[in-house]
Length: 165
Image (cartoon, one colour):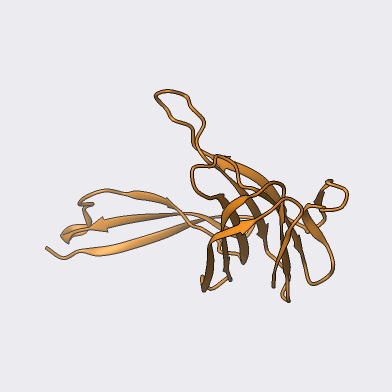
């Protein structure tokens, strides 16, 4: 049996949205399945996560990211106000609760930037209470080149600021 692979793209406003893959045998008959898979258009991104240490359910810190052009996203350590100046950025908490008991599970603080500008960023981890945290920083570019750095079990106190460049 001769097998060939055929691919087709569905385009909308110049963007490839889905691809279909068909497997053909001798005589052109379709053998197997036709798959419709989303085509992901890769963009640069920056993903920063703070996880609580030990048995804590909440991280003991807030985040403030400053972009090379001076814009900020996160919590201002002086005023306590939430800032969202960096375009296409967000700050949120995420976690999973126990699906049987309904008990809350650990929450992580996530700061995400889609299409970050090139340059040097500074990150402040601001202690809101004493405890430990793990910090994960991951970036990727349009060619899917990833960079990841993890800082494990960092101790912080209320009012203390850790600076990462």
